Picture 1 (tube, rainbow, N blue to C red):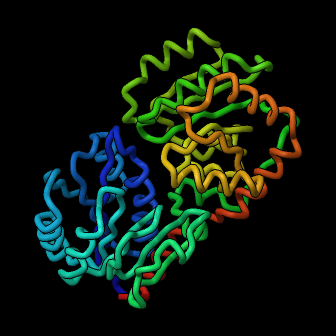
Picture 2 (cartoon, rainbow, N blue to C red):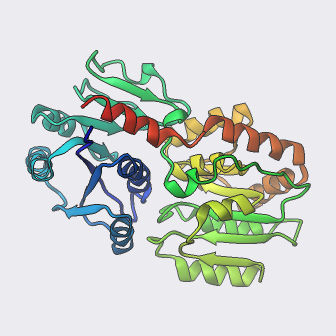
Picture 3 (tube, rainbow, N blue to C red):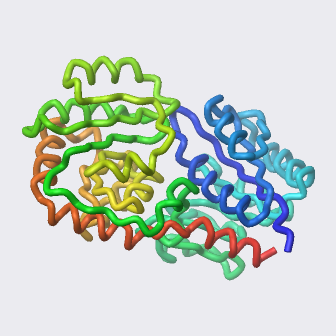
Length: 347
């Protein structure tokens, strides 16, 4: 059976981050692995992300930013026909219900990635919400023609992560290696908060790696901050092997989003922040389960508070071991494969 082409409509910028494109990349890789072709359609994508997609063997089509719903739906329909795409995937908070309705009205087979619930009844074929709090009550207006794919069993992890299946973490008595990663751009500058907290830790023998992300405009400022705190901090814009770094880290600081599921899959205990309300809701649930330590809204957290929580976790081997176990139990790394099989069987 020929899969045909998978068309993915997603954007990335300093303001919205790179999470939408990166999780769609995981789905794209799985589609490729099953023998299909992938085309990304984006507006204003950073050069480093374009290079990443090209290196992955993905095709790339740039469209004009700022089109209204009807204009863009016409454009997307033409691209679907040009590439003979069997499915269109849409991921982004700025794609509203009117836009989705326009796309579906043009006869596109449509999967929508969502995190917070659709407000209106959009006759899309699939809604994919890979978050731990996803449930049918978030989609009361979706009709019988829409299939809901809900929960972390559908979390989308890229190939470099799924290669670590079968690996098991050995939790150390103390935290020796700390990782901070806030995605591609960190618009709220949580990385700086983390660096300040590191300078306040009681244990000064911790090696700290910071991944700023390829679209973070504060790289030099963060490097300057790190140098003023400790020579044991290294600040890197990107890392070639992120899963290995996560495996080598005893604890991570991150913002909720795709990176959170990656860290959970890698059994890395996580201290996390919620940039928006839906993320904070997810973190509250995970915190109650003992899976993640929730710090809440970053603007309401002081560096000394974060340092105190890290110190507490560093001392508790049993708590970190539990977090590691629960993380891998909730995210098994097979989400992208599951979604691709469902789409392929729905052609």
